[in-house]
Amino acid sequence: MLNLGLIGAGRIGKVHAACIRQHIRDAKVLGVTDPGIDRDVLKQWAEEEGIAVIYDDYKQMLGDSRIDAVLICTPATTHMQIAIDAIDAGKHIFCEKPVDEKIENIYKIIDRLKGTNLKFQVGFMQRSDHNFRALKKAITDGKIGKLHTVRLISRDPAPPPKSYIATSGGIFLDMMIHDIDLLHYLTEGEVEEVFAHGSCLVDPMFAELGDVDTAVVTIKMKNGVLATIENSRISAYGYDQRAEVFGDKGMAYINNDIDDTICVATEKGYETERYYGFFLERYMNAYIRELSAFVDSVKNDKPVIVSIEDGLKNQKVGIALTLSCKEGRPVRLDEIG
Image (cartoon, rainbow, N blue to C red; front, top):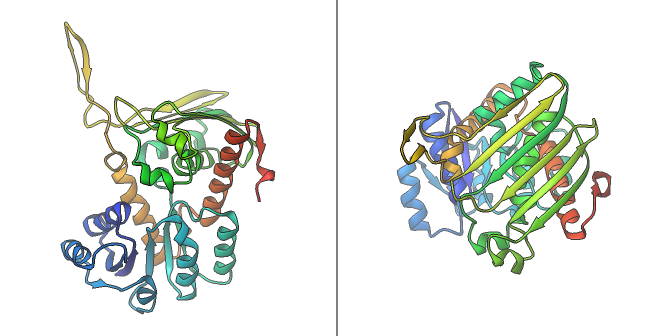
């Protein structure tokens, strides 16, 4: 049994804890720490999840020899120090995206990992989604031939609260970074140049915070593949996640998941199920699959499915897109450290 320590019991931390308890037999969350949550509230939740130990802070957790690996689910600004301390304590790490907001901090973690046999997986769950895995297989099986273009669309049902946006890093580093990871995953290539356009069409609070809520970008890969990504912080019809890949022998695309595929036709027209209203509903199976893969990589010494180097590449592209949108010009990736 792999003993896990949960650092951060916010929304995503609680999702991971529930996934492990309900679906992963060879691992358990032994303990949790989150100084930002009232201890009595944290204790009640921990008891409901079958978590035995509540630590005063993450350093106390790292000092517990029973803990094999930690899940870092705290704000991104805290990731570097927690990760380095966890590496020094000999703990395997699952870290929610982004690894860190600053490129230089990610390099520091990479340097600290050198010479160890520790696993470090980044929480980009969409690679583990059944639809995107099928799309990837269509490419690798050669069904569409040589890849030419990729189109990714991501639209959220409603914008997050202002308090979240203020510390999110902006649309390119918070929302679109998932699409960036998918682009790397689908193409297995390196980004050469990006160009981003952004507007505030959903809520003026985004402009007040120096962010945008609607963005369309073009990306050129080093192998010549071209990509477009479209993001919006609002979608009246539900959580919208679609993708298309085009090659010299054909194309493949994926549509949104719904509870069922029934379509009712009447004199008023056609009625179908609404798309999921929240990303946790849409990607719950992906969360289970990525955590299962992490446990498997630790227990059986397998490569992680999303490495810290993957996280670094994604962050560089997100920073380049942010710069492009701000300055209104193409940005080459070699401009980013």
